[in-house]
Amino acid sequence: GENVEQHPSTLSVQEGDSAVIKCTYSDSASNYFPWYKQELGKRPQLIIDIRSNVGEKKDQRIAVTLNKTAKHFSLHITETQPEDSAVYFCAAIAGFGNEKLTFGTGTRLTIIP
Amino acid sequence: DTEVTQTPKHLVMGMTNKKSLKCEQHMGHRAMYWYKQKAKKPPELMFVYSYEKLSINESVPSRFSPECPNSSLLNLHLHALQPEDSALYLCASSQVAGGTGELFFGEGSRLTVL
Image (cartoon, rainbow over all chains, first blue to last red; front, side, top):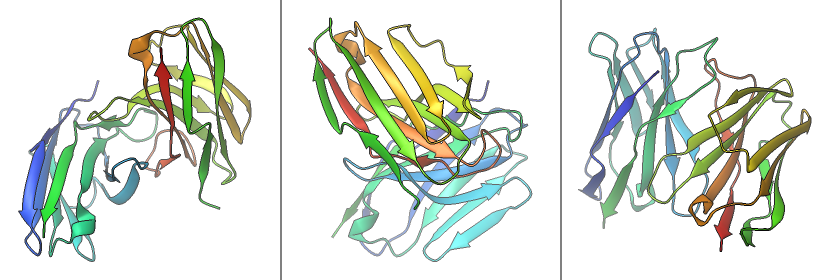
């Protein structure tokens, strides 16, 4: 089955600086890579996703890059703000025919004012 | 309506009790999921229902019994739980199972087993 590794487990960043979280996956058939944000005591919510036919996707201050050859993908947050403080989970799924989304272990991001 | 609603928000039960967690969505999604989340860990898949049929059971102990009465409702029946079952139980839904669709999570039911 799929195995997703995520680094770092904790990350502290000065407000206004950038944050980068990296994930690697094992199953070359995986073709969908979402990122979920979970604030303390809240539900996980999708913040951005990327499909395997795209190398990069951007949504305002958030971007995700995918390297299919190396089997890794990264989340980039620029101009960080206090409300970016949360736990971020990457995930991977091998598309149709596979119903199990495999999550990474999570990164606790703290934005220092 | 893009909400997944879970009840109760908090539940405390003894090891001999029987209780149920409930989940509801009205987005027309045909896949519904139960996840278990321990503190500082990612959500861990328990069950997947696709078109109201159980399609995945991740080797979950029989003291957890899922039920999908219709396409909008998902229950998790609990019986003879152990203290280590204390966790946040998250329900989620998606348009179809698998594929590349977004999972919509509920706020969760925080379960404490005494």
